[in-house]
Amino acid sequence: MRHFGHVPPSVREGLFHQEPREFTADSPAAMLSAGLGATLYSPATRSRLADDVLKQAGRGVVSMVLCLEDSINDSEVGDAETNLVRQFLDLDARGAETPLLFIRVREPEQIPDLARRLGPAIRLLSGFVLPKFTEERGTPFLEALVEAENASGRKLYAMPVLESPELLHLETRTATLTGIVDTVGKYRDRVLALRLGVTDFCSAYGLRRSPDMTAYDVRIVAGVIADVVNVLGRADGSGFTITGPVWEYFRLQERMFKPQLRRSPFLEGRAEDLRTELIEHDLDGLLREIALDQANGLLGKTCIHPSHVPPVHALSVVSHEEFSDAQDILRPERGGGGVLRSAYTNKMNEVKPHRAWAVRTLQRAEVFGVAREDVGFVDLLTAGLAE
Image 1 (cartoon, one colour):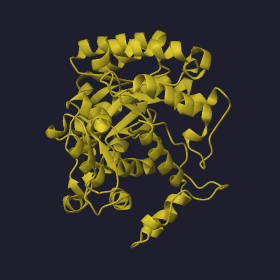
Image 2 (tube, helix red, strand yellow; image 1 turned 90 degrees about the vertical axis):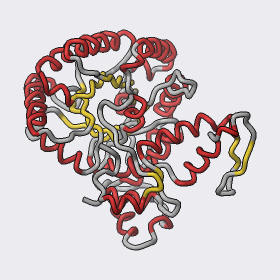
Image 3 (tube, rainbow, N blue to C red; image 1 turned 45 degrees about the horizontal axis):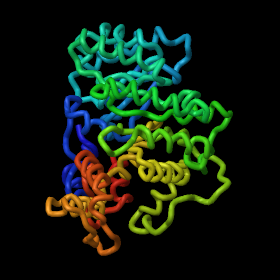
Image 4 (cartoon, helix red, strand yellow; image 1 turned 135 degrees about the horizontal axis):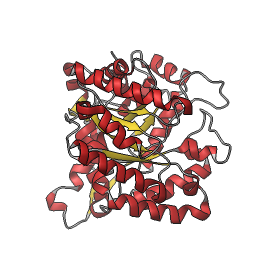
């Protein structure tokens, strides 16, 4: 699989200075965590789940979570597990290429049980999403993951979801973060990424952000995101990939504020129609939130609707300017530091302070590619939307 793999090769060639690299579920963890992109969630109760998975793979989705937790009713769990196993067996029989597939469970005991029930079809499973993760609740999940991995012989990753009230509440946040650091540190080779459960954060205070606002406009939420990145997202080798929060909206809502998309990037061809469509479906707010995710150290995003996937991937492509700056900063002769003018002659690149940024940028470039010098976000989004 690879990002923009659903786009015809001739179109990709015109878009990319450096095309996204292919990867598989067995690729190095660093590549997989950087390449998760828009992780699409789907309830495990869907009767045609196997068809849905293959359909979304054909539209450019590279990671999916099949959910047994909050997306389904408590009374549906048993039937959902049975359906999930059946759908995996169906996918295995078809032999088709699938996205990276994860199962979001409710209880630790589900992990070894589902791994056993999947049988040979476990080859299609990349891991489990662990809800409401803290040191106390997370350890049994991770122990169950190791048990399932040993029994199946299949490498399985964990994606803990940080969404508990203890993490949100100021008086318990530091202790909770410290406990999480210790827990995921013990299982570092099995933790692929950390996910933020912003909907649960808002729920603790009876809040819900409107489509006119991003998660960063809700100050309580923005504060906990900042602290999570501060403690768990450091660039010194101790940090983890942290993914962006879910965007809840995908249909037209009544607006209070002006649209957040400038006209100028959309003035050529039919791009103005694309701008109108994005605004009508409240995706201009999503675009702003993706940009803020990246500015705040997050990579990838939880998605609950297929229309959210192309914007996440289009904004994840490394621009030619970013790539040029990163390469300049990391040249061997720059090892002693110093300051240099960007090749684009519009900024200062300071080698030592910008080095960590440059390393992360080239990691992203490996999986999302580098756009040609004259290719912008609108071009990438238009290509990603084409079927």
